[in-house]
Length: 463
Image 1 (cartoon, rainbow, N blue to C red):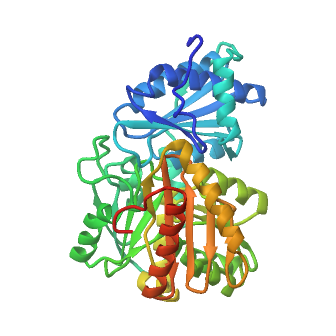
Image 2 (spheres, rainbow, N blue to C red):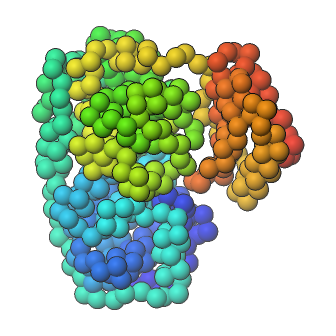
């Protein structure tokens, strides 16, 4: 086993463990992670853990090493093989296991990989991830004679996805797997659904030869949009590399962003959960929060991060949550984790029952906004800069200005709102602004540029 192992300082992150293969992450790290996480599981009273992996070229080797680490702590390891991250989450719930580990680089470049974990029914993040590092560094590790076995859960998972389809008319749907892990189950899923289904890039390929699997980036949706036009489809659905984030386009080929999707889902869920709390992250549109309230729900703004949102859902009993990035969590009829194929099934059913996706989106008032703007700032400097901006913004609060510092700083003015926050996964600051007019948007962007300048940071070119 790994002795006196030290992780690269950038690997243990807020929401997961992530690094560059051959540079900051490799098999020795995976083995040590298995030991450290396995120790957490054993000391929490657990005995059985599932492990799966995505389609990246490095994933099988990392999985093997992590299994060795987990077994060294005395655990029984169920190896479910290749598939999307939500299939791993499903396995832990379906088989009533004690924990789960997913080897995945998510939407990062091909040379990245990482680990997402769950302990019991909840995500492992923040202090628990740091504890894995401390256990490994201190060699404070459980030991035992564990075992492993392979188990194919894909058919059970696919059947569960298809079970909640509730459409009433046949649709034509384009699905873009982006050569990611969803391709492993997508054909069998769509075979169980009515209507016509066109699949793009379903072959799992860790080189991602067609486009990068990140549906929040417009150019990654160009193939999907083209196919929707070509096939005169009702909707197009895209996925990220490990299948926990969804992207969508309507019948006109217009992109439906994550917060717009959440508003569409929320209006439907609130019909059966009147007055329920619906959670969204700080990057989401004000129109989403207003629409939730209009439909009788209780909107709750929370921190960005799939682990943080899942934890808040469990705390509040919310039936639905989501974020701008396309992580959407259904506890209504489902388990409360982010499962993009499941979200696709629910969207297809909703469009089939209620009408076109463009029509469903049209209830949201038009606004002028920026996409999520990311720009590089030194890892240490980014958090300090946000602290400075929060302090200056709070000094301006009142007189028509509201300040929310739940995650970075979100400032609401008569023009709309602007946001600056430090990413927990990259050395970047994230900015976004939304206004009721083009002139208002320019004023909000000017406020962001001014705040950055006061902290000695140059705004990205063209912003």
